[in-house]
Length: 260
Ligand code: 7PM
Image 1 (cartoon, rainbow, N blue to C red):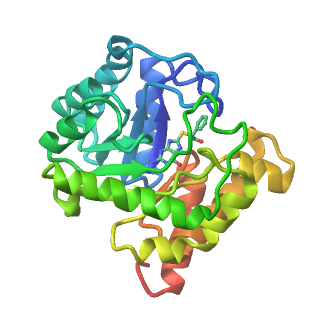
Image 2: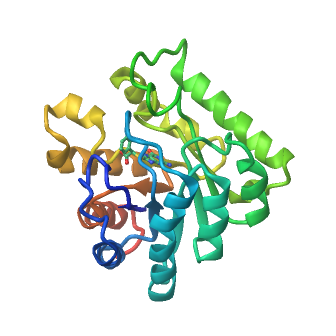
Image 3: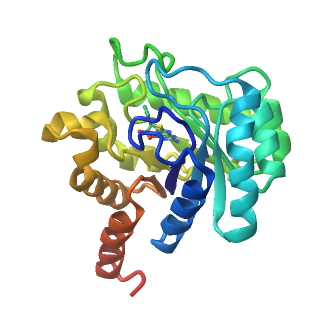
């Protein structure tokens, strides 16, 4: 899954994909490099990022989804928590919802249920503005697992098929380095819950903490964690650097006797 940020304030793209043509070219390049899914987001979850109105978020993502759905055959994912954005995006050609708030927002569960597309349910402690102030858990793996299973149950109770759900422990979303490492070690356990596991580790602060590198220099750490996550059972890996990640995963796949 390649990340396509349409936010002017996104920390790792610096707003360089704000302009539509650049965004389209970047999405096409990610598909050419081997992405199966493009995750399109119009609202930054960066701590302190300004919140975006529903109308502005739709204005940012819709033209890009329309253009990409006619040009690309890959799955387009809409990264949003707003039901109106989900609805508009799917009508324009998106085939998946990625909600970092796991459909807990007002009206999100019912709308997502009615759309009939796959949904990724992510765990976050707190809200984006304050989540990294003092993340605390008794048992991070148990608490993340319980939350995700609770959201899966809520989706099923609302009428959604379990077959449409993915789960994501939400690396860096209200987690310190120790919490992220515990969750990484628990990936086989999370994968064993029986739903496809999506992980996002690309360029995250935990890599900065482990390598001392700024966000623009975290490629090697990101590829290492992508490979590790795939080997430990992740089904979908959300990354900024599709080419290098796919190259690493293809080599691993050949060793495992898949592909090549
Ligand atoms: C600031 C903070 C900017 C966090 C960007 C981010 C995930 C996601 C993101 C993830 C799923 C980033 C994140 N991360 N969706 N959206 N899983 N499902 O580093 O880990 O890309 S945004």
